[in-house]
Image (tube, rainbow, N blue to C red; front, top):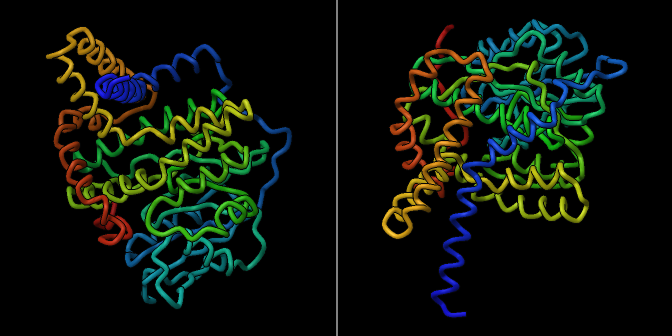
Length: 392
């Protein structure tokens, strides 16, 4: 085999891998439709598990009063709240009279999600069966804890809820929300209902305390991406992550370009650091004949949306000069991806502002390209996304 032959095989293989990511969502959708899954699994009995609701804050505390207010209004009684105020000083935002709320001030800066979670765990007032992870800029639907408890009572030890947009004040926020709708539909609802696991989204999720400790207590995770490590550990253990679309948490969307660049640079950095987990999970799936592990491993290897979309457009353009029929195949694959994206939006009661914002996708991708150039130093430049507080 000549070097030219080998180079050709490599280039065609890369194109196939990129193209697969374009059509995989529709493959999952067709599989899901043929499988006709039930919308949810009903447990035989439901008991109120003891929840620890962990709220992590880094530097910013302006959102804390609102998130605590929403937590205290949930339709659930067996829980305590732990606010880990990392790199924060006592102030009026952190004063609460409710005995269910515990504010913790780490003596040293942690600057780590898992570090904050384990600081809370090590300061639990009682041994909680379940821990729920909430960001400081979230708001909780009144039934979220009840719904998470329902999934956990069905025999699962990990469950991801759905993150709805708290704000749609700019095109960036709307496109951020569109992205979440897409991922929750394919990487949450469909993945789980075809027999695999939902991907974790960073908040609005709950785990048995034992599973969380077994998964992460022995690891030192720096920077963003603890959810990627956690889901990999859960899948390696042969367990499934449930998805509950009725467990709703409202998440602050990035509304400004600087927020978008900082946030996405951390996320891109996270993918480059942790996509390798996918190979091991796929391998386990093949060895164990485990569809949960195999399919989830494929999802773990998938690059961020804008990367494989741009690579797909590049492949289509290059093939136009050498292999016009292949270029046509790329165009069809891109149209199938767009169809799949629209299917995801239509599956949800999507706000009309989100549809109107789709015309800004090129600008949105442009700022993500800027994020790509800053990804290598992302965790040094920023630890958490700083949102602008607005009374809503």
